[in-house]
Amino acid sequence: MLDLRVIRADPGPARRALARRGAGEALDELLELDARRRALLPEVEGRRARQNQASEEIAARKRSGEDAAEVIARMRSVSAELKRMQAELAEVEERRDRLAAQLPNLPSPRAPDGETEDDAVVVREVGERPSFAFEVRDHLDLGTEHGWIDVERAAAASGSRFAYLLGDLVMVELALVRFAVELARGEGFEPVVPPVLVREGPLYGTGFFPGEREMIYEVERDELFLVGTSEVSLAALHADEILEAGELPLRYAGISTCFRREAGAAGRDTRGIFRVHQFDKVEMFSFVAPEHSDAEHRRILAIQERIMAALELPYRVVDIPVGDLGASAARKFDCEAWIPSQERYRELTSCSNTTDYQARRLGARFRPEPTAPPAALHTLNGTAVAVGRTLIALLENHQREDATVRLPPALVEAGAPSVIPG
Image 1 (cartoon, rainbow, N blue to C red):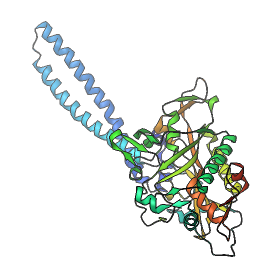
Image 2 (cartoon, rainbow, N blue to C red):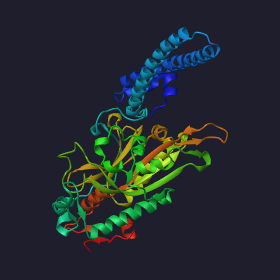
Image 3 (cartoon, helix red, strand yellow):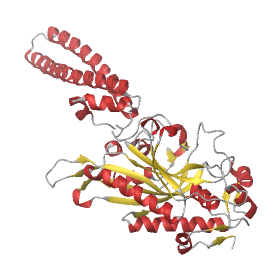
Image 4 (cartoon, rainbow, N blue to C red):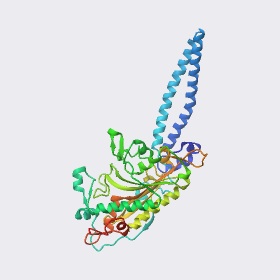
């Protein structure tokens, strides 16, 4: 949620920033509603005071035996005006709050212009793409041949875009999660197994509601929702709290299963386990003071790159354009791994600086000085490892002619076999 007090004082910078996201006119409408609300408030309070004054005068006249008809008539007129103004105020506030909830975060001036992922700016490419002297198999061919992936039985049990992972691949997943968590913990991110069912508040607070509601699975009977990322649960850890400056930064690594409906994604990446409804992930999340959020963003990206390098995956870092940012992000970087069967880079991880957008919606604040008033925190999130897509990259980049897969030492040290099937 944007800080209307700051924007009200000088709307120009916010208007220009939101215009890059196609939301400049919506901001003008919001400011008009906000101005009308502020104009109505003293009018309502004034009439309420006059109504109270008239009530006291009527009571006094009745006690003294005087005629109160004139005052009663005047009070009825004031009451009618008050009722009309209260109704208008309620409507204006409802429209203002609804529009404020829909406005995205202000993009960073350093975020590139553009509307789609094709407009992303390549920051760097790292690692050498593998060269194969044999016909490359994709992850589903490899997984099916060895009995690691079964999408047919999963479809019978659960429908499309689900999969059974079995045998050696399960051991690789467990090693992958352990490796990522231990690395993140070494960087100060406390491991957390968070709830995967949350109420509406955390989804609103993180900016997924109202805009992405169709992507979220809902358990209507219990008024709960399955999270699409543990970012939601981790952000809610300090909702409506005031932290002390000395407690910061607070960093968490969430380990959870995630669920996404993938509404509107029919026909896109439906083969295998690239785009599925259920997947496991390790997610990093940080609460920091505003002056440290840029540095924290670079820190999270550096950890992601360490993971990619340790997994021996060729990758590139891309700076996401403003038109492709999620509602809460001011700036986002993706790490994309090379996928040999597709002969292109695909997203494995992302990291976003959401500045104070989520914190304002969640009421997450800190006290910069012992006697200072509370201020909004900055929050950041970044994927340590999205298991399914990382398994794809590992299988395809490290496959061998005999259809076995060599695994990097980082995973072997975390408990995976050096070769599957071994």
